Image (cartoon, rainbow, N blue to C red; front, side, top):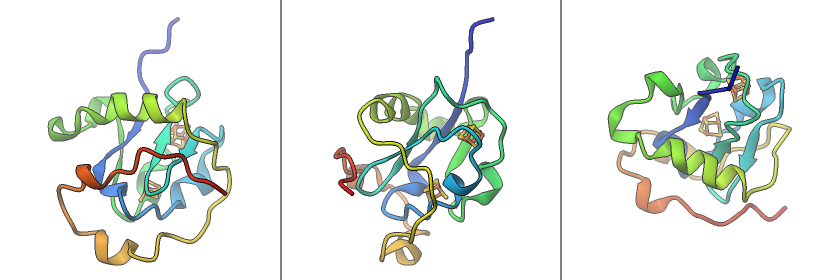
Amino acid sequence: GEKTMAHVVAEPCVACKFTDCVAVCPVDCFHEGVNFLAIDPDTCIDCGLCVPECPTEAIFAEDDLPDKWSEYTEINAKYAAEWPVIDAQKSPLPEAEDMKEVEAKREMLDPNAFQG
Ligand code: SF4
Ligand code: F3S
């Protein structure tokens, strides 16, 4: 049948990018922006392995995505198509620990692809 959902990275990832999620994903569906990761909804197999790994609790099954972050479904699809795959864990952003508890980070989401 047609695939209808996927897991979604939401706002708590912004400006943190811990990347623990990448280490466990069996299908390499994370894509890397400057300060955020996006899941390719066409590749994600909904295994859920990444959810408990994220230190900021940024990842949700689409059905569990809080309403306040509903736009992140489209944000993931859009940027996953534009950004390169990240298939190995790396160091978090330098400000990650400070930004972990900060709310309303939408305006900080950098639309640019990470340039290795
Ligand atoms: Fe990868 Fe599974 Fe997380 Fe989807 S749910 S992004 S397949 S680890
Ligand atoms: Fe972001 Fe959490 Fe992964 S902060 S990079 S979704 S581990």
